[in-house]
Length: 387
Image (cartoon, rainbow, N blue to C red; front, top):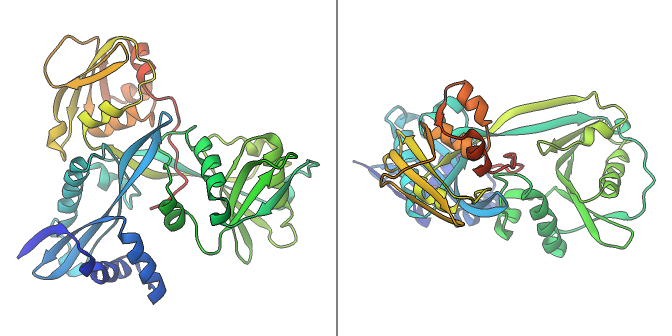
């Protein structure tokens, strides 16, 4: 007998055993305990055959920044099935159940890291974020003379400062995670990470980086700077590893201009598809959407969603006198937009240009295109986290 349920704490070891097998790693006893603590912050959906856990999916409740506003979302991770239970439609059941769970828990958006982009497009997710990595040599970095200093710190000592710097920079993009203390401890930082704070000449913190040093490479996992001098202090610290490593890997935000200011900007760059997103609930999403123009306008959205039937049909979105409302009751509209949930997700999260979606016939629009564009968030989607 097959049943799909939310897992309980008594299932933790079965969940971890399946994860170890599916993703080919082995956890120590202490690592298992850490994972169990992490799982207290997750909703785990399992499919059981009799009393055996056959498949599972982790739903991570969290918040992200959209238009500078913190919006709830559900992260999908750890989808796995034992080989003896594969090809029974379990993943489809898990994905469909996750949509129902997110809707009932008031998560209007979802994100996931795909093993196959086309596979998850079938369930309504669409590519929204790219990862940007560059590889430089310490000698590529100029020598700077700058006041102030840098210092290694512990997270607990400076967490409020780190949160503040991160939040300022994260809000400049779309879909960056609004990290809470749990997320920092269990999803961002690892035991070997170096946290380096930079201070201006007045002793004020104005940037930081997270780094990891291996035998032959220094990895900058993320970095943020409030001023030219802050960037130069951090770069100087990186450059000072010239006697230790020959290569520096830097994970950058999409529009970080720092390469231009190196001795040798001709470095290896990598851009690859990273995360996918999805509008889970059209009504809830637009009720919370941070419209960029609150002038009076009504938009008709004609939505096709094969996986979440509650989104299907015509929706009338009105922005009047700074009040936002959405209904499926027919009314006069100024702009008409038609598309599937994947394309509409890309449109309203600013993951694709409106003109490109039109050119490739992913959406249809009638009405004032300029007015529609004025409603959409302007921030570029980005993500430096992983789950």
